[in-house]
Image 1 (cartoon, helix red, strand yellow):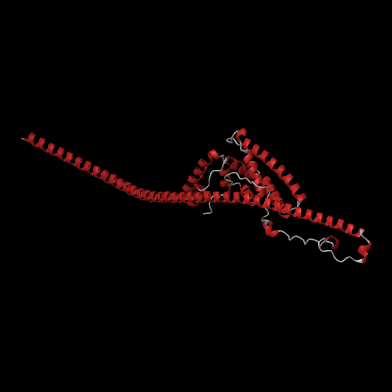
Image 2 (cartoon, helix red, strand yellow; image 1 turned 135 degrees about the horizontal axis):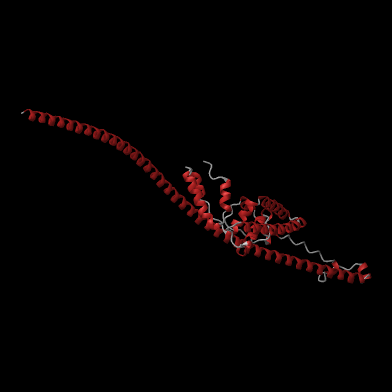
Length: 341
């Protein structure tokens, strides 16, 4: 069988978290009574969402057009981030803030319309806002939000999407080679003067002008080297920041992978338990069918015995009546004989 319908799943994820388990178990029982173990098994695997995730699911199910607008804007924002289009990125970022604010307000209205929703003061709207912002940065989160089957709130610690195809860690090997230092003018090489020409001897002011030019060139070189050192320091700082962020991301990855392993094991154990229970149910159904057949045969035997008893009783009554009639005749015959004597 195809499994649970989309309407049934959406109905379950529209249910407040404190009533989700009861509603799911009732749907599982209905599927089993309908003879659909595949649907029952798939429904039993559905997990209860947190309150924040339920609010996001409620938004996706009740107002899918708003979530579709969010996903479309998120795609445009990620494209602008990858292409480093500053003006368009600033425009889309402003739109993102406006859209998230409007969606949080809509979530508050939808929750107020639900009879079993938590009070307005206890709604985790900050987690809802963090999840919607994460959808702008992570396409996978955006798909989960649009599907309306989110199990827990999501968050994003960075700023925008990291453009993975263009990401490159800058190292010392990436620096451009320094340009060769301009050669000193002949007049500035004090240790190794070239033989003076007649023009030099005739124009001593030319040496002083050349010396000033050399000093200006040296100051320019020093400024350039200082700028290069500052650029190297900035790249080193950025690399350290990226290394710290990478370490945090790897730690988070290990943590969630451990959670995934544990959850997978729990799911596998749950499936095994469910399969065992279904096998027991099948055995009980078989025994019930056998017992019903035995009961049917016993009923038939009882009815046949009741008919035989009725026939035997009727026959016994007839014989008793014949005996009484014969006794009466014998009495009459004995009375006549005595009178004759």
